[in-house]
Image (spheres, rainbow, N blue to C red):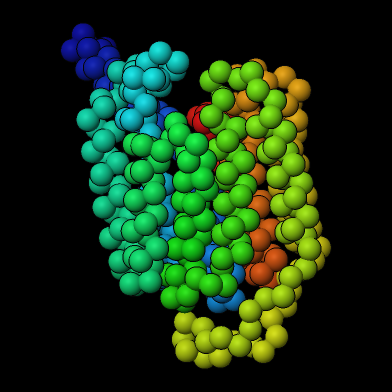
Length: 323
């Protein structure tokens, strides 16, 4: 083998390694495993309306993904000085991604998210606009204030309503599901505020109590809206099913099991590593909660599709942290 060929192979190898390092840096910046918690928002919102997901639901999912990842990029840009002291391994303080690149990505993803919502229709854009504003307000101003967890909960609830608005143009039927999902997000975000310092048992204890309450509410049967026109203008059935009780219960138990164990560990020993695991468990528990809410609305197939995202997200979480 000639020296020239060996040299070329070395150059190619170094370039491939640089590309791989860059891809991993962006995966860390965007917290790629957490992305699998996003499609379930729009699908759960559609399920709450009693209408099957359609092409506009897919546009809502695309919008949600873009706005979610915009928030992730903006989060690290806004926290770059704090991360330099507490998390020097993160992509920005470690120098693997330039701050300007992260901010540009946040702006581009926000624009793409709003454009996709506009394609889904005016009702979807009406929800996506305050959603985008909430994401930016949280990252730039509210994160370290008492309003931070509330803003994050509002963003997750609005994301669910985006799916309902895009699918049918209505959001009223999805308000209950949005409130429950937002409550879960409020608990997780409250725990996350201590993930680098630890030292407090109250947030994980409160999150544990919240998980128990939400599990009870999701498994309890509830009346569903009936008789309203669907996206095609046809009247819905006079009586809609209250959901597959066995499936709903199984998914609710999966939600409780995913969140409760790490919350309990963090409450018993609120060290930074266990608190971070509690946050990760809470994020992963979002998927079975979405699935349980969909089953509660009578959308068993949608619930199964959402639940199938959990093992995929768990697989990638072994490689890239969700927090």
